[in-house]
Image 1 (cartoon, helix red, strand yellow):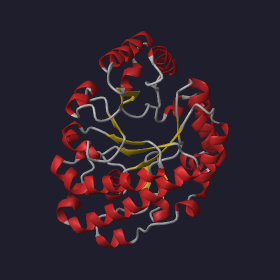
Image 2 (cartoon, rainbow, N blue to C red):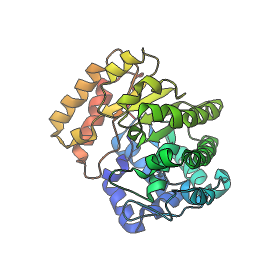
Image 3 (tube, rainbow, N blue to C red):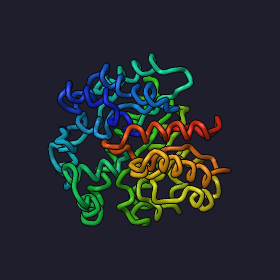
Amino acid sequence: MRQAGRILEPYRRLKQEKGSIEAMFQDPATAADVTMMPVEMLGVDAAILFADIFTPVAPMGCPVTFDPGPVLGFAVRDAEAVSRLHPFDAVTDLAYVVEIIGRIRERLPAHVPLIGFAGSPMTLATYLAEGGGAREFTQFRRLLHHDPATAKQLIDVLTDVTIDYLAMQVQAGAQALQLFDTWIGALSLRDFQTHALPCLRRIFDATRPLGVPLIYYANNAAHLLPSLNQVGADVLSLDWRTDLADVDRILDGQFPLQGNLDPCALFAPPDEVEAEAIGLLERTNGIRHLFNLGHGVQPDTPYASVERLVQVVQGYATPSLPLI
């Protein structure tokens, strides 16, 4: 359950104590504590590394701060800006992440796996082209059409970095990997096939020999379903807009599916949260399904609703249906 920690009171106290989200990400003891909170307090069936999709961006040469959303040191909209980015050695330059993972694995129960993750090159490129957050995120799509050669250079360097960063996480102890593509839905199917699919294939082909399950999360991507079976992941994770039973039929049952309760459903009273969860479980009965939200937990989500969700799913689940 991505970002579940931030609804917890101990997380909020830590955030106030540390003063910034960057300090929390980069302090191994704090990051390990936050990773463990949903496991220890909510009893979820898997842990996900407390980090940010921008973790590998600063070592590439582009500073990142949060105010409260990401603010990048410069926008990447031309060849000169792309030339300022470079690959790096993840083990050396992100040694604190290696330590975080080691601390988590020491504390996790043997039956609870640790999921490592990264932002996809297309999603990171979207933020880099904007120089941070934005309302419509058009700058990278403009670059794709105005200067496709430069866009490809940006995608290529991000792909190299992503592969190295994910491999480092497995070497440090991560037991599964998830690639988050928050903004992939902004691409047309044709642009996805032309620009995104090759880099995704390269990432999953390169990480497959690591021997851990590979999950691809595609947000707002129902129109991309005809090509999602080609990305090379073991599991497809989808947002709440798409019916998983329909996806399973469209993809002929080729993949386990992760998701996809609307995070805003957790603002309903606990009894209605239970009804929503059971409805999803019943609709996905008979398909390979990993229960999860269709996106990250909203920071003001009522704790009681999340607690009820976990109880309901675990009370319904079989060993083949974990809650993560």
